[in-house]
Image (cartoon, rainbow, N blue to C red; front, side, top):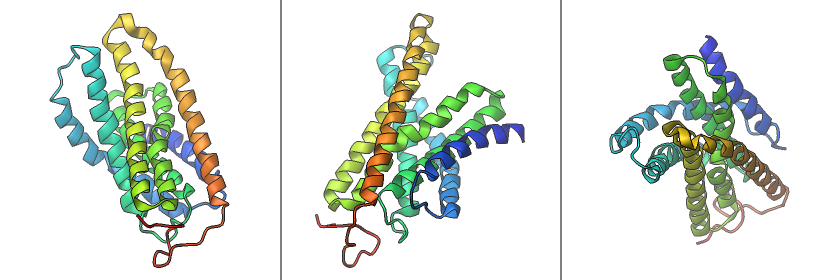
Length: 239
């Protein structure tokens, strides 16, 4: 029970912080549902990560290979799984009617994922209070594709899809860089200074998430006419 609470409480605190920033909050039950789906997505991510890890030597033979591993495993696999969860859960829902909704649901899925990740870690290794930083960081990693998914609701389809792909790429890179700083410092004591870059990186990611939130809030207040035939979409959805 202690490990469960240690993994759950920080994730819920961060989720509530962003949930109540939305001026027209989504149904709490469905946000909780997406959170649970995010946690369950670990079941998909972990086997894929184990397969990918078998392609790399441990300990890593070079920093470029370590960064490549970070790009593929925590970056591409985890961020892609979280994105798929959100798209599958909300894209066709009628109450997904404001761009900011995608950011809220993206944060919920990311926090669900990190809850599952943290619980697994605590059960295997015991309590580690430093993991609260990764709990906060996961939604900041995902803010790029989550915000892009929201903007895709007010853009033509092709432009929206391209923006989501760009957002996913950004999320993959920043997630990989975060893990690279930690693993690089652990792999070679001479590079312990890499940990010092974590604080400015987290501050930057928090700032980006706040800016995306503010921009999506402004878009939310802009009157738009739903597209004919698509009552859950905004604006011109033509290609």
